[in-house]
Structure formats: C-alpha cells, structure tokens
Amino acid sequence: MVQSTFHKYAIGIDYGTQSGRAVLVDLSNGNEIADHVTPYPHHVIDERLPGSGVKLPLDWALQHPDDYLEVLRRSIPAVLKEAGVAHDDVIGIGIDFTACTMLPIDSHGTPLCLLDEWKHHPHSWVKLWKHHAAQPEADQLNRIAAERGEAFLPRYGGKTSSEWMLAKVLQILDEAPEIYEAADMFLEAADWTVFKLTGRITRNSCTAGYKALWHKQDGYPSQEYLKALDPRLEHLATTKLRGEVMPLGSSAGGLTEEMAALTGLKAGTAVAVGVIDAHAAVPAMGVVTPGKLVMAMGTSLCHMLLHEEEKLVEGICGVVEDGIIPGYFGYEAGQNAVGDIFEWYIDEAVPAYVKEHAYREGLDIHQWLEREAAAYNPGETGLLALDWHNGSRSVLMDTDLTGMIIGITLSTRPQEIYRALLESTAFGTRKVVDTFVKNGIAVDKLYACGGLPQKNRLLMQIYADVTGREIVVADSKHTTALGAAMFAAAAAGKAAGGYSSIVEAAKQMAKIKQETFMPIPEHVRIYEQLYQEYCELHDYFGRGVNDVMKRIKSMKK
Ligand SMILES: Nc1ncnc2c1ncn2[C@@H]1O[C@H](COP(=O)(O)OP(=O)(O)O)[C@@H](O)[C@H]1O
Ligand SMILES: O=C(CO)[C@@H](O)[C@@H](O)COP(=O)(O)O
View 1 (tube, protein in one colour):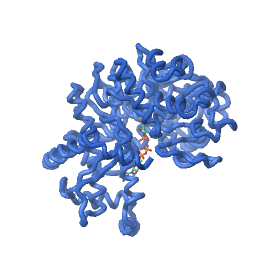
View 2 (cartoon, protein in one colour; view 1 turned 90 degrees about the horizontal axis):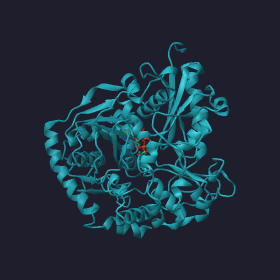
View 3 (tube, protein in one colour; view 1 turned 90 degrees about the vertical axis):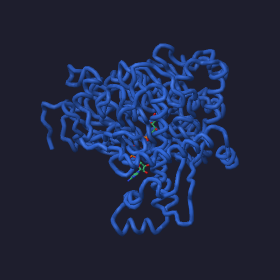
View 4 (cartoon, helix red, strand yellow; view 1 turned 120 degrees about the vertical axis):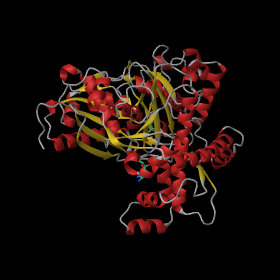
C-alpha cells in the first residue's frame, strides 16, 4: 500500500533478547504501518562460541554483534517495502536495546570478537544483559562502595547488579586482563549500533545512568573508588568509558552513506541516541507523569515509574534524573525472569500428555495451560512459588538465588504448577509496588506492555488481583519499538516533521487499550494472605536466614 505523501514516518527498532524488530510508524498518530522481525542468527550464545566451539562456563550469556546489523539489513528494507513509503518521508530512526548488553571494541570501533586475534576468547564477545557470571565482581563492587560510603550506592537501591557495566568490565579485567588492555572502549550494544548507523560514538544517558552508574551532576563513580576496586581501573571513566553522554531524544547524528545504501533509507536521516528497551515503553504508553507504574512484561519484567523527587529506595535498580522523561526522576525496578520462567516450565517440565492435548485442540501449550489454570480459584492449588529461577533483581538484587515451589503433592497437576508460577511473578511485582509505596512514591495504576499482556489474560487478572490495582494495557504490538520511534521523532525535531520533545510525541502517538483489568475483591483478599506467605519465604531464603540456595548452587559450580 502506498502511504500519503503528507505523512511523515519514523522507524523504531527494538533489540530484544532473541530477535530484533523494526516498526515503521506514522508520526501523526502512532499507527504502526509495517513491522518485521529478524531472529538473531546466532541466538543467545550460552554454551559454545560460534566458529571455535569454545565451551562457556555456567551463567554466561553472549551475543554476536553482526546479528544486530542483520536486523538493520533485513528488517528496515522489509518495512519500507511493506509500507510503500518513500525514504524521503522517513525522518528518523530510533533504537531501543536490552541493557546492560556491552562489548569491547578497538580504536576503529570493531568488536574484539570479530578480530582473528581475539575471536576464540569468550571475553571478547558481547556480554548480554543476562550474563550472570560477574556476581563475585558485583559483590566486590558493592562491598567496597559500602565501606567507602559512596554516594552512588543508595541511588541503586543499596546494591549494584552483576548485569551492569562495571561488574562486567571488572570480570574482564579479573579473568582476561589481555582483553581489558586490548579494548579501546567498552560500549553498550545500543551505542555501538548507533555508532554503526552514524559513524559517531556517543553514549546515551539512559544506559549510562541506569547501567553504568553515571550521574547527571557527578558523572561516573570517582577515580578514588575505581582505584580502590583495582588500581588498573583508576582512569576507566576517562579512557575506556569515555564519550559524550547525550540526553534521550537527542540526535546522535545522520545516517551514513554506507548505512543508507544498506537499508534503503536516505543518508543524513536523524538517528536518535539509544534507549533501554523497557524505558522506551513509558512514553509509548503515554506515561509522562508520576503515579503510573509501567511494566514491560516479556522474558523479564522491568518496572518504570516517575517522581518529582529523588528518593533513595532499597532494592530498586536505580533512580536517574531525566532517565526516562525530562523533568522527572525515573525509577526502575525489575524481575530477572517472568516469561522465561513459564518458558522453562513448558520446555523442561511439562509432561507429554499436556503437549498432546494442546496439539489436538490446536492450542499452543501456554494457551492450554492458561485455560486449565483459569479454572482454579486463588489459593485452590495449595501451591506457592518463588520467582527466582534467574535470580532476584528487585528487591534483593542477587542473581545467586534460585526458584522454588512449595506445596507439591502426588495429586498436583501441571496447570496448577503453571498457575503457581504465574502467581509467583505477580507476587514479585507486588513486592516492588509495596517497596515504592513504603518509600513515599505513589503507585496508583499499572500500565502493562510487552508480549505477555497480549498473550495471557489470566496472568493480567492475577497481577490486578495480587496488586489490588487497575491495569491499563498497551494497544501496540511493539510498544518499545513505538517508543523508540517517538524518540526518533523528537531527535528529528518539529521542523523536519517530528516533535519538539518526547512529551509532545507521546501526546500524539501513544497507544493504550480502552479495556482495563480491574482487581476482583474476593481474589484480592485471598491473594493478600498468600502474599504474606510469599513474603515469609522471600525473607527466609533471600535475606540470609537460610542460604541453602547459594550453598547448593555453589556445589554445582
Ligand atoms: N501465552 C503465554 N503466556 C505466558 N507467557 C508466554 C505466552 N506465550 C509466550 N510467553 C512467554 O513470553 C516470553 C517472550 O515475551 P516477549 O515479550 O514476546 O519477548 P521479549 O521479552 O524477548 O521481548 C517468553 O519467555 C515466553 O515464555
Ligand atoms: O534490564 C533491562 C532493562 O533495564 C532489560 O533490557 C532486560 O531485562 C531485557 O529485557 P527483555 O525482557 O528481553 O525485553
């Protein structure tokens, strides 16, 4: 279909864990005109390195940087073709990315893993956000920061994560000093991809703020702190983390001729600085004021909230000034796994008869289990689970914790376990909501986006019942990509046919559904009881009363 030439468009590209997708968006109303998904050809690399077959240790998760370019090569031409839009009318490109997904590059910007000299070395590869092998380094970072009373630590809930930039850099330094030396810079994959598009290295304030401990006034952690971590890190901030940190919604530069030829777009098209995937969803749901907790629900779950003041909240991932929407402090909390837990159950633990039933009825296994699980009332399964199959992000910030199901008997059925797993993730979110509220940050309503709200109504009803709050659902197949396109519109600017700010873009382009999920009072009452039991287990296993999870995990290592 050929679109009207009076319309202007932007392309938002969402780089997820398994795939990247491009969405071409009409800037006048946020309508998604065309979309295309490119699965990463190398998938998540967590067993062996591509090519050499070098075996990876436990808790590693890597990616191949060329997979990000493959998304540009395949998905941009595909959406242009499907939409029939002239490249002159595409005025901006924005990308959102998982984070902290980081890589070492040489002085030409080439990832070290693409060089013959380093390609056999696991530490030269992109470390994906869910690479969890830097926990000892995170522990060291946290201990030294606490001992020195570093001002940054309370802004990150009292603990920084093994998923973040500094822990990952320190792991490289500890285990592969030669890679640390060879790296000219460590970059977020978001910034590297923007560099490939524009030829210019910039850093975005969102990943820098939430994942690399960068602060608008104070910059990165001090030289003294970095030196106390390891003398070789003393100048990290001005050497391997150097580069201008630019605010969200600004332009990193224009598309290069080479990239224009590769994608079919026009050279010079504005490229917005990158943004974390979850954070891009906030304006895409029209959330530009406090009290509305946005939940990006997919493989993992990220919670984002705005507030006028900076409050120090234990166990959250971080608070960053202007980190999401200018003029507000943006708070982030999260759960390391949500959809991933359900996927694990289906892939690894569901009996064959469930698969057969689902197949016969033409349902996918999630749909079959959802339908069967919906027949139970809250509490009726007699089960209670902890949602730590991939560790706990908020509020414990500990990737060495593991999952658990209590109450199993000989009559327990797969759909009951499935329901208990759905509930466990809702309890995890309730913990986050309660923590914000206890610290004086209002949570009035929930806003859900990502793959899960579209796929599982039972899950959404359970979240409404467990939190006792109304849930608004995104009316977009690709909310994060829509947000990235909005940032592109802001980067292109009003004169080019975009918007003067992300707030203006959100007013015109955000998409939410009319139908919401309301809590059911009878369910709220029962879940309140179960949640209190969850809290008991949470503190017993998660706050050091009984470290059995860590002891048995270390035996495995
Ligand atoms: N019907 C369903 N109910 C619950 N979870 C589902 C369902 N279908 C898929 N999932 C889960 O959704 C997750 C993917 O979420 P999605 O938002 O599409 O991707 P991503 O987080 O990578 O952006 C997977 O972990 C999968 O287990
Ligand atoms: O950590 C963050 C955001 O802070 C996410 O990038 C990470 O959880 C990955 O999210 P997905 O569930 O793959 O969309």
